[in-house]
Image (cartoon, rainbow, N blue to C red; front, side):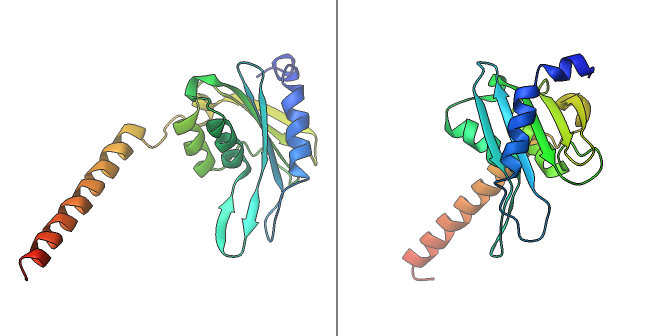
Length: 163
């Protein structure tokens, strides 16, 4: 993306950098995130760590806020991800898959390296061209759930028959 296009998202770039300061970390780096919806609403998030629970990534925390507020896949416009370490880091693979499943391929993904002040932008489709197929995942999950229900029904019938 050109710098002119990225300039139009200066608001979420700044809000992602602010959100980073609220990150709760134990052993990783702070990450902040801001997402802009097509109606102009903005949500912020940051990574949260706990010794007894896997890390909640900033991107996922932010998307969950939008989902909780009632937004759907086509409502997302752009997401900015800010971090303090060197390099161009536009979301980990897990977060890219999460974005793919819960936003849309045209989402603009902006990485913001606060250490070098480097800002880069991509569409989600360009950044993550080969996502895990969502429909395949749903089919697999439904099959697994069906198997579990069948197994439970068989166990219940056997218990009733005294076996």
